[in-house]
Image: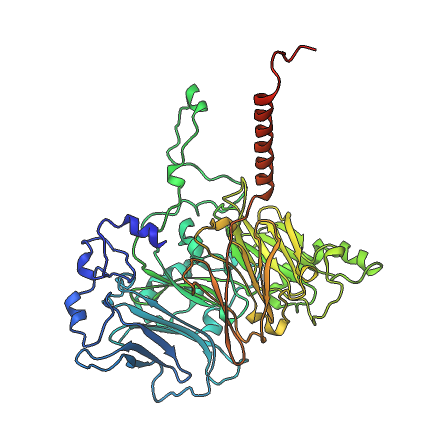
Length: 590
């Protein structure tokens, strides 16, 4: 939060210059302030800079593998107006190996400022480009990936890494092999050799599991993870502290409590009347500069060193699943939407067999009765990676009276479920919001699978968002951010092919809906464009861009105001009667 960071800064930084910051602090202003940059180097850069000493820039990756950075600037000695100017370009692939026919699948470009790029010694920040592609243009062939870090101002490469996804990041099926069938000793012994050798030849199967390196606070920055398509891929910089041992990961069993630190060996009688204050359990912001890079791809998660790009660990995860710590016990849980219309995949046999055993009796009942409902439409929750126990199994197609009467869709489909904060006494737990393309939305309790509320949107509004299975990559289920709304009460935003809807996360009521002038051609973009602190929406169609502003008004307690008004009226009547009534009689007189 900008205001919170500004209040913690001891020295103001009004103009965003580096020399205004103290030695070991970072000031916050309207523009970023870098304590490690050199002010006179910026002044002698030869470009027209912003008052904060920056260059508004755009980084693009072209189909031939060339990265180009354009900036809105001009020469300091020129008196012409500002314009788009190319500062540098970097060719990822050599000229003797053209890839003009390559099919690009995942493309992610992220900019890290100078403070976040200290590990890589990039004085002016760095640009990280991560992508996966098919070199021959055939999606059935082998898939390759690369991650390149480039100096943001000079355009020189800091480090680069290339790998073959089909052999290095192949997801592991469930259930995984037993411990006796794998060679953990060889994996541990090869890590040091990989870190010292050529990283481009490293195999991800020889890397350690990321669950042993990620602490509880870091897991909240990395997870939840869900991959439904290439647009769900991403790159982020985190601080990975490997010096202190992770106490949260010593015990991965949810039914066995963790041992408390600093326990009193001899408890006296007065200890029973004083609760043990778990100060060491408080989870604050992650301290320290970013030193690791997390890449979220179709094969799972991979963590690299921000200094040299060498891989540290890899975690193989499956597609169309949600991974998050729902019970806040340090164990990663996995959630899957099981629909009868989905094609069974080889890596989903374990989950589908479990779903068939759980709901086989329910399927037999429907064979001789009502066939309007789907045979399998459940949300499955499993604990652990690999799955060790079942958390819950909840139906998500709604009751008979809640289901849409007319089904205009070809196949039943879902998009990425959303993890939200629990309400009431379960603030440390998490709930799940799941939306289907037939208009059904459920809020499921993450710890037990109980249905909190359900909404049949198509029965409430004719323009409720829907989508087809072929266009689910354009649908979006997200949260709306507002300055005056607490995080657990932020409304839900659901966007489909032709409309969007705003839904209350607490009650499931439909707050507002709007129909698009044209069919959406891409996933909506969320940003605060109006400057009011609330999330705005950008919709890209075939021949236009449409913006929607969301106005959040405080809920008026109408019932409470009516009761207060009636109470005031009664008090006024009692006062008037007491003032003008005839005296001389007591209340007990006849």
